[in-house]
Amino acid sequence: MRSPDLRTQADIAFELLQTAIVKGDIPAGQKISEAELMQRFGYGRGPLREAIHRLEGRGLIVRKAHSGAKVVSLSVEELIDLYEVREALEGMAARQAARRMHQDEIDDLKRLLESHARQIEEQQGIAYYQREGDFDFHFRIISGSKNQKLSQVLTGELYHLLRLYRYRLSTFSGRPEKAFKEHWRIIEALEDRDGELAELLMRRHISAARQNIEKRYREGQLKL
Image 1 (cartoon, helix red, strand yellow):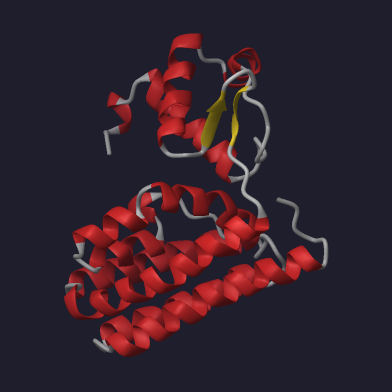
Image 2 (cartoon, one colour; image 1 turned 135 degrees about the vertical axis):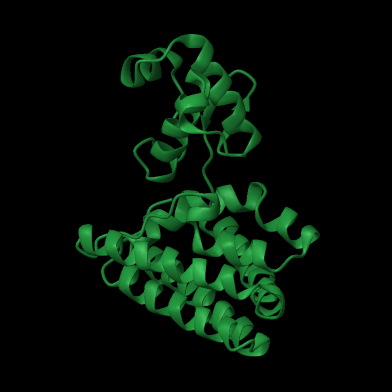
């Protein structure tokens, strides 16, 4: 990632737009209006167009003929499909990470969770927002698997689509604290070099999130 003082206006516009989309400030399915975004974020048409183009590359914005660009929107069936794929592949990543992560990487992961704990406390347990890349617990474990092909699948378009919904799901009552505790148990399995347990805990963690989606959707608490 570039140093903050080297970022261009397009870089900053991209980060602002992506965060707004992931947090739901620009909701799924909403049409993208360049004029509105220029007024809202204070950037010119050129940087915004470049940012929108980059977001298209991540699958967060889609463009169709005669209807323009809009934020991607998934059906509940599509989202469940993604979570089922994620459960299997991230479970595999956790198993491999237990064998391949160095102790200093695990120590860094602990420090990351400590920073997440402070964030959850500051948010009074309302949400568990993780920035992308090295600030994201799941991204760290995927990288720690040291499996390039697996990382390519899990940190590509799939990763960015899931981030669009992970934050929204973390805002349900009690979920931030529960997810945080599950993260700690996964770290303990990694440190014990117990790949079987790490995979089991990761799969349970993601399965619980999927079941939460299904429950909230059935009860009308989750709108996609």
